[in-house]
Amino acid sequence: MPRVFNNFYNGQRVLITGHTGFKGSWLSVWLRELGADITGYALEPPTVPSLFEICNLEDKVTSIVGNIRDYKVLRDVFEKFQPEIVFHMAAQSLVRPSYKEPVETYQTNIMGTVNLLEACRHTPSIRAVVNVTSDKCYENHGYIYNYKEGDPVGGYDPYSSSKGCSELVTNAYLRSFFNPSNYNKEHAVSLASVRSGNVIGGGDWAEDRLIPDCIKALMENKPIVIRYPDAVRPWQHVLESLSGYLLLAQHLYQDGAAFSGAWNFGPHDNDARPVRWLVEHITEMWGSNAFWTFDGNNYLHEAHYLKLDCSKAKSKIGWYPQWDLNTALDKTIEWYKAYCRHEDMLKVTAGQIRSYEKVIEKGETQNEVQILQQGA
Image (cartoon, rainbow, N blue to C red; front, side):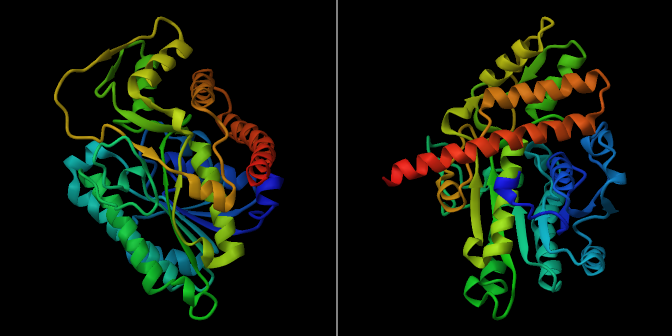
């Protein structure tokens, strides 16, 4: 991605918490392709199978098994490896399990953030920190509205509110310890939080997530059972959000505290679609008489409508979504079909990253033209 990252990540010491998870594994593969020196800190892979194990990432990054709630171990890892850039992804990341284990959810997502930022505060090598929260961190009233970075955070369920709390913790550390007005005076750290849409892509095997549930049913020739067919979500391929995180981290490192704060990285408005639409397209792409059915039981509360306003990322750092939802679904189904054929999945995963890089280079040129035209 020479036009976007300009070889920036080659040789950079990067620490990823939660690197054994779905998004963390994709980020690890991408940073490895970019030449970064990667240290990962996380629990064992959360699913069987897992993208982390499928791609044999344990042999390709420095992987430390540890709990984000264990501050002493986390601090020792920071002290030993002296990272320059940190992506914080370790979390309990699902709504429904948060109802079953609210204490663990709050401990992981709130105190885990505190532990991470404390470790950063006491590590002199740190220059850029990106805390990955969620689009569900906003106080959602179900309105047809695109949430902006300055809107109130909150959350109905334990997961959503824990991510809202993680945002509050991040903002408190930003003001108290990494204040932009004191940058290069009292500290040299740029800190941001990022919120993305509902990410999809190959290698996600988590329970109670739409795409993994669909794929498991399809692979077993069973009907897909969905709970909320009319719920609208901002769907996007995992590489879309990760490209935003990587681009933002580069700005945080190179350009300093002017880029600290909260950022949205979501899809185009027309890619916020109901669950029903997504499942119908997945069954059509998969073929083999695949079909879905509605589970009419009463379930725990989840937000019905959710969209993000990404104008800040577009105007401030030139980030734009590149793959529309149809392309994202194509790439996702392509990945899982390759897995069923027992292909080299690290090669497949890296290949999709290279495909995205080619599109984003062209997209950057197109966006530059659009910006110039708007300015004229």
